[in-house]
Image 1 (tube, rainbow, N blue to C red):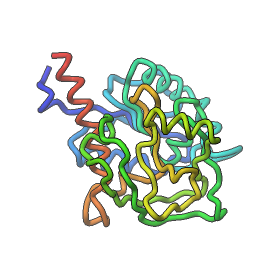
Image 2: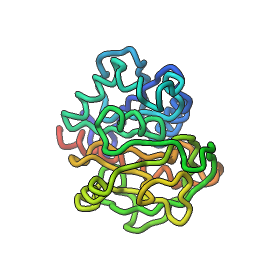
Image 3: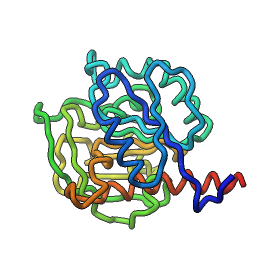
Length: 235
């Protein structure tokens, strides 16, 4: 096996009927030195990978509500097993909605308070940097990453928000411009075990300054660093 420094991380990218940003995720991961491995929603078993990305889009047409049907797909059974074994899972936009519907992340995503689709760059504040998804960031750092969603209002009751605050599970907050009305300005959360993250902004659309911002690369590259470190530990 190659050393952690030269190991090429293999990352599964799950595609559902209605996925929209799976190819963008594949391109972004490739640009950062990873090998993206496509996974179809009907695949019951995941390939040999170090992480999983559940991309944005409108899985199953967002019927019932965003992510409600995708959570029952065969691929999500594999994702759940992968996460339970400590595997790294990142859900972006619709992927965040799916992970919440599947119970792998806390809270739920509601329609934007404006009841309008939003699509623009937003500023995010990094709350923690001691996670596999934010290790390349600085505490309190401001990131500029685009959002594009109609159901991105993260909701949790007072008890849940208090619990997340106590356990430092809120990783990203909207900084000044909350585009959807999320409670406590939540833009991204992590599970208690620290291996599953979801966020509404799209880091795969912010990996090159030519696209307006390279800040999304910090989050994706942090995850790839963690995959390499885990591979090195197995040498």
